[in-house]
Image 1 (cartoon, rainbow, N blue to C red):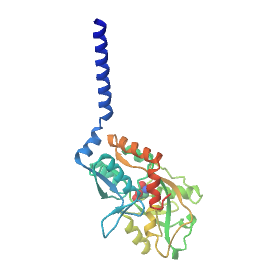
Image 2: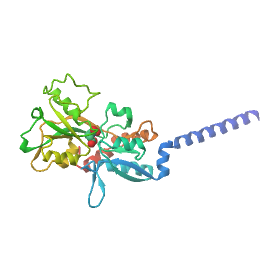
Image 3: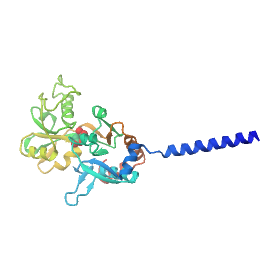
Image 4: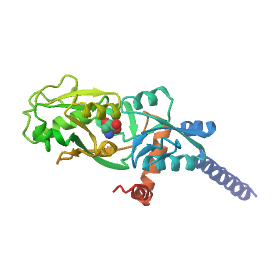
Length: 277
Ligand code: GLU
């Protein structure tokens, strides 16, 4: 009888443990739960980067692989999605203020940025290039010596260009410090004019206010109109990741989805749908 009681107690304990384990497995992180409870995933995206984040001016509809990834995450969470157009200068602040839950906006993963935000495994890698007016006669990095280049505030572009010019032996680079580099102060071999958005840089290029426009090739594409060309070089690989608030439980959720979708071909499918590879 005693043995039977002990056996019954053991079975009961086992059953309790199993119930607990099942409960834990279903436990949703509070940061993820907050999005589910709100019923809307708020995502910062680009609105003029064809193939990544592009908003049709007539219909207001967004398209691009970053839009597809955002929609897929929202679907997985079982919530709606709300897009906010961001720039290189605004995306970090909007994440910090809690206005958006994540950024899917050609946001390059860098060591410095990782100190401020969490980033997922990269879902795409682009390169930096330079767009010029054909009439300028500029065709390569060497022609940029002594020129003024338009870049976006808050972007990696100026630093990438200086680094590429140093590697090409066009600038000696003795004063270059990756960590403290400031485009506004740099005058060694090339100088920079910073702008808040890309349309303004494009206008400045037409107006000869700057001699060249430097950023990721994906972003330059829409400004590559007749009478303009890319220089021959592209450089500085740009790994795009989903950025989330540092330490948020939602970071791990995004990472889980991205790694699964990279492994099963979902991300490659999104890229292919926009002719990206
Ligand atoms: N991808 C680059 C960066 O994160 C270019 C800027 C941009 O994304 O607008 O700095």
